[in-house]
Length: 285
Image 1: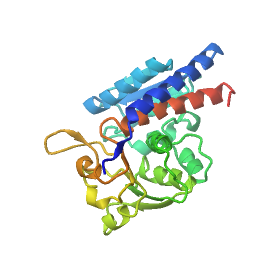
Image 2 (image 1 turned 90 degrees about the vertical axis):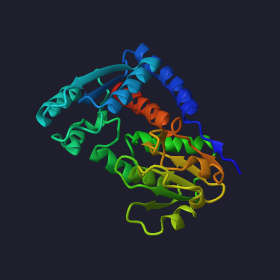
Image 3 (image 1 turned 60 degrees about the vertical axis):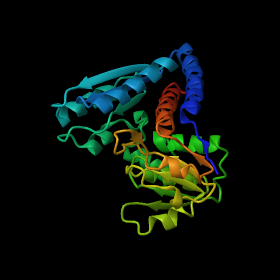
Image 4 (image 1 turned 135 degrees about the horizontal axis):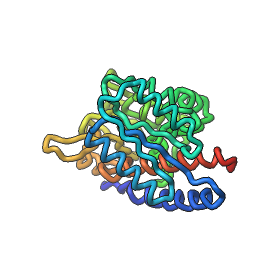
């Protein structure tokens, strides 16, 4: 068996085209969607991520505002910037690029963002709304994974789904979205004993643990859909995921590559969330 490739880059391109149409409609009606991105410090990786997001906005007609702050920025200074953006009616979405410097508490900053502008979906109000099945914003990576599963024609209802990873950003919200789609969900993590016994049962396997190539082909059910959220470097410094693509692709029915899989979808769903925020602000949803 050779797995079919879940091309996140191609799907994201299609989603961006739809976003451009929605943004043009909103702008013509007097509301140009606006996304503010706050970058603290000089991390090269964060700078690359932010540049991609700004370029996506330009492609789709969403106004972007990049706020660059030095690595020495205090928590109080960053919170003041967030309050300023909260009060700006031309800004519909606010994204503070993570990670933040050690002197700043990430959760404190996340909680300072207006929940109606929290397009990452990380605020506790949005996390709680997702928990009860009434999401305002779905976190971008899990949201993108669900779109990929839909694109693959996955039968989620009644499926055994296993999520490896329990972060607030991916693992937990991913489990909630799968559960709301009527999957039977198991969440595995660093304390799980006999991880392979769980992953081999999965019709849908989402790997989001942050360890290079830890999911190998012998841990995968034949024909399963495998979504690799990981972004790591292997022993040669080459970008790779949490799944050993070479062995897994011989067993899985569908598999997402790294790069070109979940990453582009995460950025695409950020645009979708920003548009949803702008449409609500304009009274169009």
